[in-house]
Length: 143
Figure 1: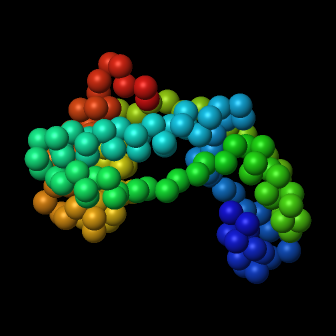
Figure 2: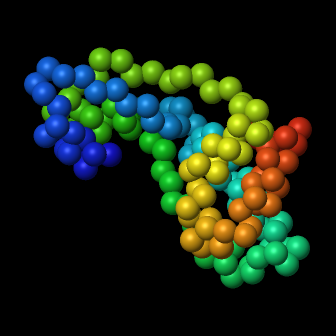
Figure 3: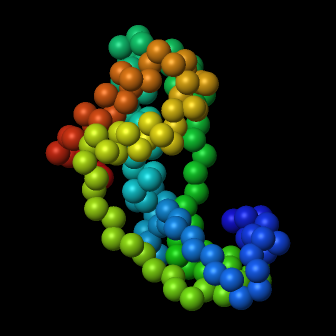
């Protein structure tokens, strides 16, 4: 994020505003409790299920990684202050409602389609997203 802020310093006119909408963890919550990370966990579960059915190799699943880190609001505030080129006018958490499974699946497709195609091949994409959508619908889903 520091590199991002440093690049924006050169683009924004003096006195200009920048709005950032970031996936963040609530202060006091663990990284694994962040909504985006719970969806990635369900993606991993879907890939494991496909490997168990023989649709994917376990080696491919084991070598697939989506490195993510969602800072807390406090961490974002500290990074901006440390940068010193910006000041925060408003910093707040937006309510997160569980989206409909098909919407969530479509969003995941937009975000990870390229990574999935590159790592596993295009042919598994639709089936993997269907399985993921079903996992989003499960009543015990932690989302």
